[in-house]
Length: 248
Image (cartoon, rainbow, N blue to C red; front, side, top):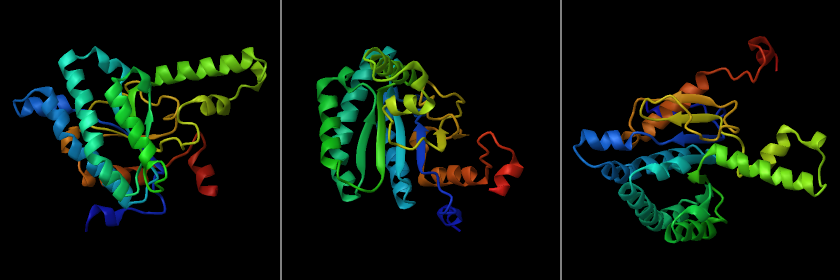
């Protein structure tokens, strides 16, 4: 039986976040440069997106480029930026045909102008789509996002709009770039690494973490479905006991 048929569609995560890791190692195994891995990872992005769309999962966030990635060799960063422009341009028709809305997290102002323009145009053209929301975290890190949020809250304090005692967890959530988007319930990281790498640290507080040894270019719909099936086996307690959960 296909894995997708084993999934309980009444218990799907509403938001899946993915750390796409392993492109460089995949390329080395082929005897190629790292950018070869990045180019061959597009099929995995397509598989994850299509899989979420088939299951009517509302949100998928992909960690595409972190603020720390600027420290990589310049030729690799330049190639990544060109690849992003090329991919967005090529996949725009597919996004529209599949009713997918594109959004971003991160500091687009810090990107090369051509890359930022492609992202902004894709977001504008797809803004009325009502299917899956595909969120690309580009030039993003959670510490950067939280710093920006604290600055916004500090400005509201300085202007007298709010008082220190008014600040709650919801105040912080509402000041993040993800305001209005449900927090991820499932976080998938490929390549066998087991860390969050400065990704959605606030939003992943109660997410189920799933680590797979599969390198990102090899990630398939079946791998996505396996992660969702594992998610559905877990008991999500949110600080409560098993007995309390069962009594709800």
